[in-house]
Length: 287
Length: 306
Image 1 (cartoon, chains in turn purple, yellow):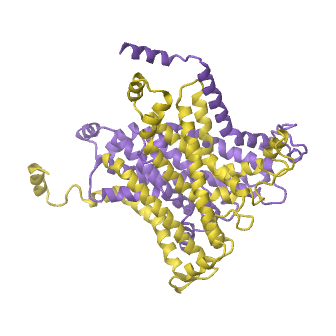
Image 2: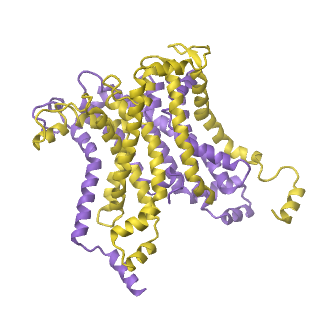
Image 3: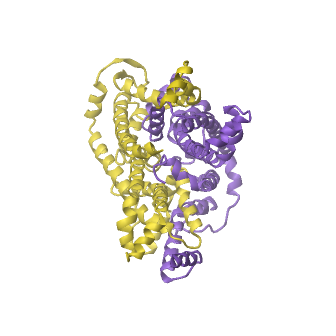
């Protein structure tokens, strides 16, 4: 017992051995490898157009063109793209929360006939992406006159992200002891106000995770936006960036300035929920 | 059920507490959203796959399996189908094989571990289309970093057009798909590793087991569930992976890098060949359904405990 305790104490203090050094170096190189394309993105976004195809190719910009980040706003309707992405992602997230919180709460607190069937339905939709159903989605949206509108994009995104939120939140709600709520209800809370005043504040990390995950995945969604959105004023950034591609002379520097603007905020958001991501995505089957 | 339960139930005759009617106000909106957004398009897809449909999308009556017949007459379908199987299995296999040691590595404790984990999240958080476009630029014929590096290392005389040369383009797609799939997979396996109780490992150490023996005999078997889930989710994601192919090659040159997903999309929205496209859509959907059913079976045990 005593040796084990000593071992634990020693583990807390980092001891530098050749083996540890090898671990560290390989880990750093792998970390670098995974951000390598994004470093290229940043470097390219800071080159003047003339340097893009210069021969021989230079890795670093010769003259650093920070102005690219200012000029890009007038080169393409980036403002519009970003506004569309922000509006659609926020609304889809709000819709997901509105629908998933009550469902997750009830499922966590009650056994009822059809509960298993409901959970199965949710779990099955988590596995679906809109891609395989895209023709059906296109026809449904067209049927309701929703082509090239934000509400259509919002509802489709909310529908496909609902499952993650329900699973994640019901896990969080189950972890709140029922006694706390019962005490609140004895003190005169209704079931709804107990949820609002007691349970939701405790499960805030779960709510934040669900919010960020839905926001980011709507922000990045490509296939549905490509298929149902057409006008540049309403297109989100994920499909809007293709404005720069497909012309004869691709403006890579502006393209990458735009992708940098689109990628950096969501990466920070995603990193902030690192701890809870896996649990929600694997429906609690890995823990 | 015991005696008191029965008494209580007899007194409150109106509606049993576990009736789905009580649940509906809470779960109804979720069910409605799923039916509207997921189930409706699925039914619509199946319905029109058995309907005569014009290139403009107008329907003209039930035509049985005519659309499927037309689809199977398509001379490119066979190669595309075989390529899809190759694509899904090679990407998933490579992803899982590479993620196992990576998860092991970022489970070690060392200074800066947090930053390495953060770096590995980046491709997961970033838009897949955008990541694919960056790789496209890196692999560009004349100005890309990749050819430049190969030349500087003396590994290449002539620059290679990785994305347009049919000998290489499929492998480039596989490479990018593995790159974007590794982070999620590694984090799932990492979660599995972290759930292994320390005392089991310590007990094995006391018994004189070496690190490799501990990994093979204890950790790997305990990772089975995590691996299974990661593999199934990856199977579906890679099969569905439209943005990578669309951004890098559009399935081209010709149909040289199409999978059944991009092939169906092209038929419907580029060539306006709706009928066979819906038939292929149904086949794609059936394939995903099959994997989902496997997934539901696999996770059932864990759900029952919950």
